[in-house]
Length: 291
Image (cartoon, rainbow, N blue to C red; front, side):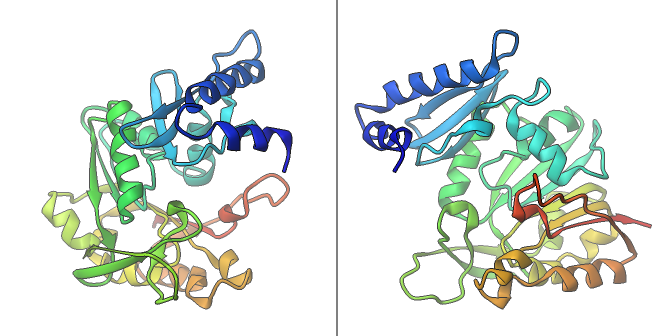
């Protein structure tokens, strides 16, 4: 274990977190240099989570301090999470004022805060997250960032309505619908179709559907045929890389997703994934635009 990780381990506990936050802020300031605004690190007691703030925008990340290097560097004058959201979800699309965005698998809101800012007062963002712990952090992110255009929804998007069990992954951001593995904690949450959710909220025209739900893409698509007919742009994070890593064939969904979108009249677009610089999770993102 490195000296840095030993220091984090010693301070990431009651009585030490204030000092750890100050050290992290000093480190972020050094990374930013004299001419850039630094990212601020904070510990949010209400959610028992670490978070970051940049230019008034907050993201509540998780229970463990895991900020190293790029997590604390602003990019092109914007928060690090904003630049990643643009790179991984908006390669081919531009969200505009007044748009409707469906953020399915919103996690803690790192992408949602960008969508909320861009759609403006005339737009709407539905931020849908299935893991209860992650959902609480999502709500805290939205509250601290004053995301008034976003509606947070605790639900699992599925083929039919009914209870769904969400299984914990190595962290709450990689949780998925339960596969019945022994030793995994499960959380029961409401399962809904995206068609029903759009009808409930009166949504008829969707500028962007972004979906990142850890292997549950294929069944989710079965419950959103009506919604997709009224959707202009789609980006879906498939997770074939996890199947390639031996985590189970449940995660191999890219071909099914591509076939479904093509059958519904979407044109598939290229993914600019670069293995030299991009995280492996971006490899299987599917981008599509209605013809």
